[in-house]
Amino acid sequence: MSAPAAFALVDWGTTSFRAWACTSDGEVLAERRAPEGLIGVTDGDFAGVLDRHLGAMGLSPDTPAVLCGMVGSRTGWVEAAYLTVPTALDDLANRATPVPNAGRPIHILPGLAQRGDAPDVMRGEETQLLGVVAEGFDTGLVCMPGTHSKWVRLDGRTVSGFATFMTGELFQLLRTGSILRQAVETDTRPEPSDAGFSEGFARGFLRAGEATNALFQLRAGWLLEGAAPALQSARLSGLLIGLEFAGALSRFGRPDRVALLASGPIADLYASAFALAGLTLDRRLDADGCVRHGLRAAAHLLHPDRRSA
Amino acid sequence: MSAPAAFALVDWGTTSFRAWACTSDGEVLAERRAPEGLIGVTDGDFAGVLDRHLGAMGLSPDTPAVLCGMVGSRTGWVEAAYLTVPTALDDLANRATPVPNAGRPIHILPGLAQRGDAPDVMRGEETQLLGVVAEGFDTGLVCMPGTHSKWVRLDGRTVSGFATFMTGELFQLLRTGSILRQAVETDTRPEPSDAGFSEGFARGFLRAGEATNALFQLRAGWLLEGAAPALQSARLSGLLIGLEFAGALSRFGRPDRVALLASGPIADLYASAFALAGLTLDRRLDADGCVRHGLRAAAHLLHPDRRSA
Image 1 (cartoon, one colour):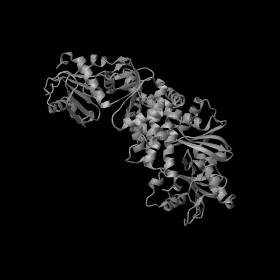
Image 2 (cartoon, one colour):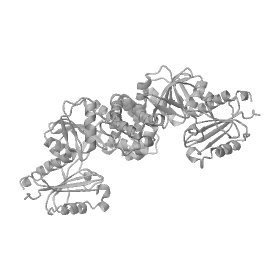
Image 3 (cartoon, chains in turn yellow, cyan):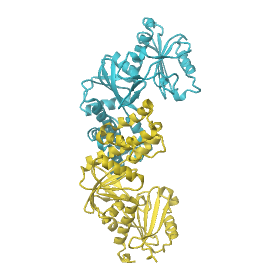
Image 4 (cartoon, chains in turn red, purple):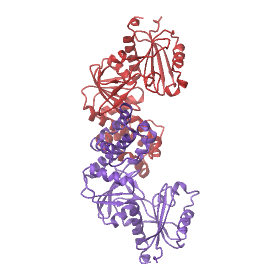
């Protein structure tokens, strides 16, 4: 028989809600996934949504919950003010924001902010990073692909700097709302092995300055040469990811140690991009697993009494 | 009293219709501007729309008309097949497509296509270029800013190559449809003198590889430092134009002679961008005037008998 749940761990973003009931050792007793992100919560009833999901997992009303993600933003439940980098990742727990009058003990982990001439923010990824260091990768560059890809420099459990690239959002915008629409219209997901992907990557990585010209060429190639939309879509994906790699190496230099933190098909696409850039990955980590590990690490720091629960 | 009209000159694009009644010497006797671009023509009645406008300018039913723009595309009236560069600009008239059974003599000028590993197309701009050479600038680089900015290399009345940059479209997409929306939301048009414009330009021109990171920083700077949307909008404009200049110089090298072909506020913005890039403009030409001059030059070649009409 399993130990009882020690913690509720919750990753609550703009468009999705994920919760796990975990033992102190990290064994997952139950999991909930729902489309009830911030924009799906009506009348600000965050407490009601949370209680319903945790109740459905059989958690008692006094089980502590640790939350991360946009739920701690200004437009979320309770604002968990950003910590300014450089930040030791253990501070995520030390400086978590308690949610008052919630019945059970609830903490929201803060996001990270970078101030000065390269302003940047993250919310949610910092908790994944806490999971990354728990996995033993605590110094080097971490690549976290997505709608807004993050590249993060870790120096011994401390985030010393990071940069966000709008790669995924640009891909969607250009595919659906721009003059490239017809040229790249397809249900086919770009694959790492596509010639178009490596071609586009080389273009973006080696000739970043010509990026907005390369975009228009996707349309012209379709118009003049009948290039297939699946090919142009793979080229677009490669171009934007190549541009991201050019930017990350320009910002952080070629890393000595590098880890890729991703889940699903995008993980293979980025692994292939690392090979194209001539970089050897030291670690490949699962993003879903890392956010859970990070939440649990924070929960241990917040509730040392439940460590052996 | 003026000489009678020798030609009807028409620039017919996707969203706009412009026509001039001109003497052989180029004197404008009448002008029409209407929002009846291609997408405003119902049931393919191009002939009806044209006749109505030319009739309203008092042109007789036998006055020849010369057309350019998207009206010659596959989705227009009659397709005027692209000429492949390198192309002598006089060939625009020599290889114009006649519109059959139209009553009056009507010709549509072809667009230009670049084939091979840098595919590209233009329709309408080639006619402006004919006007540029008529103005005496026939060798050097021509910059034509817009939704899809074109940079064109002219070698003695011949277009030897060109490149399109999606600058204006990206500006609109990012301003209205992306996560940058709130950060750059403003009615204020970026001015050449804005500090944000020159800052953004330097960022795009000198550090093109970091462009998709610089985009996200516009949001982060607004969020963390309360940077005003007018400032962020000027930075966005500068960034995208800087990226375009980086790309154009990467493609064509630093030009010996360069001309700017533009109308309205964007002309001043780009003139300022040339100064920021350390390039001296040899000529500044008006885009509206050049398309008319180009159409008239083509009309002279197509209808030599009316040269002294």
